[in-house]
Length: 146
Image (cartoon, rainbow, N blue to C red):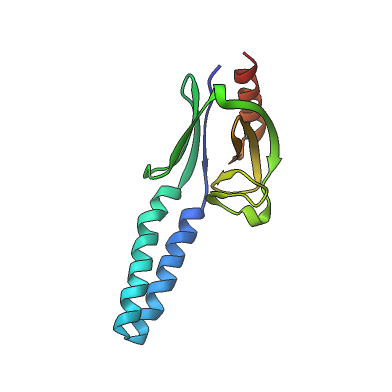
């Protein structure tokens, strides 16, 4: 049994919008320093936004690969041998989207929504946001019990 799922989300549109919203008012003021600062922020967001069009979770034989895309700036693998247990969960509203530490401990990798699979690792916790939590949890439980 293998697993592959890609969740698409409008998070990238939010980043594009923030980039535009930061640059346009600065240009309207005509202040050169504001234009440089806003332009730098806008450029950074325009570079990061293509990395957050979707989140793909895929079985790679002996490990689970998690990657944002289509620009592959952020990716992670989790060897199945490092997984102690798995359960379906929900992220907190404060957890939000992206890649970051959770206020409950561990890391969050989430593109959109609050459904997730909580992966208890030998060292830490990983919350993988997904719109396919039941199938991912079932797959991981089968892999770690085999």
